[in-house]
Amino acid sequence: MAKWAPAGRKARLAFPRPRRIECHAALADSRRGGELDAVVDALRGEDVDPVVLPVGESDADARSYLIEFPLPTEAVDRIRETLSEAGFEERYLVIGNIESATTPHYDRLVERYVEGDEEEERVSNEEILTKAHDLNPQPTAYYGMTVLSALVATAGLLLDSPALVVGSMVIAPQIGAALMASVGAALGEDAMFTGGVRSTVVGLAVAIVAAAALGWGLKTAQFVPSALNVTTVQQIASRSSPGLLTLVVALCAGAAGGVGLATELPVSIVGVAVAAATVPAAAAVGIGVAWAIPAVAVGALTLLAVNVASIVLAGTLALWYLGYRPSYWDSPGSTRRRLRSFFGTRATWVALVLLGLTVLGPGSLLASQIAFENRATGGVQTVLDDSEYDSLELLSVGVEFGTAGLDDGPRRVTVAVQHPVGRQYPELSSRIGDRIREATGEDVVVTVNFEQRSRSGPS
Image (cartoon, rainbow, N blue to C red):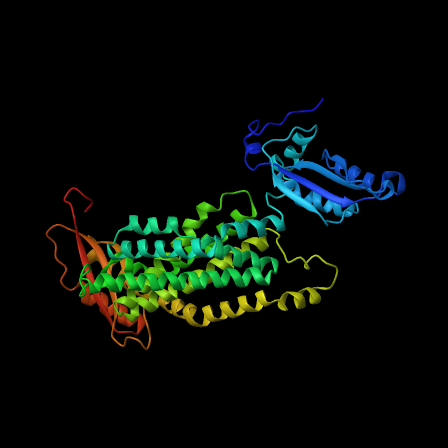
């Protein structure tokens, strides 16, 4: 008796949906060599329930058959290998979604591949290529949504509104292009990789132009005071002074995108994290251009370049960790031949060039900024560890991004501390400045912002 396995019977039968595989090949009749029997027996040996239908009016000795059977998503790769070992050539194969499966042994497949640990929860190479393509909208929609997200991000930065900045991340379409580049690099698909990189770079360039145009228009029309010091706006300052934590966000976003794309986890949620590492930084570049402040423009551009490279690199490494390789990787041959094939692809060389440019240019600036931040923060903490300042509580340390050659003035360091009511510390900023100069060897201007602590707070 057939067993009914509805989509809602078990929590993981409804999501992911089962796959329906349709195989169409010219297989000889079982009376003349047994190729059809070999395929059917191989499927049944894996607890798969195939339906075999003759197709057309071919000669009985070389008849064409259509074989259909349902599978959990996690079993697709394993069953395709089984079909290949049985002699089936994938000249015609269709993989689609179905709502539920009503076959005698489908529940066994679910126990093996979904609830068990026989296979990792991942999709096939063909499916991941399709998913990556589907995430990238048509050019009109892609660039249109990019412009809109950049305008919202620019408004949010100028208004110092975290809510508006988050709103720009939600509508940004950057995840599709970034993951296309990661998938192309992992699978050795040159056209897909270069297409993803091109879409990412052009899209962010469009975002920068849109942000610069809006910023210039607002400043010219006096909607925003032309004398506004955008470097003092917290939302802008945080995007124009890249640091280690911003790099961690980009790496995590790229890795999460790769894992979500390779499994049945929703990728759309990861899109916000990818946009968080790109769109606000692109808007900050545009603001720096509109206000003609090189430190803001270069700092945000450095952050943007490093984040884009980190997202693509982390996504590629995540896919490699999950077992995705170029199609030629498993072919017979020595390791030297595989490496020759790998380094012979355009995707590999473009990736190496982009990585080299990121490391030599923006990456070196970011490393210098991180090192300066660490020494400056250590200098601030050393001063505050003095018993004279026991009542002070360090809230934050902000360091202006260093742009060698663009600004020969001193670096600016902003320190926020909490102090008791009625206490004054007139020498604190000078002492911190002296300590940072000693630790970094650079000239700095220190600003200390005091926030009063209520009397009922800790002393």
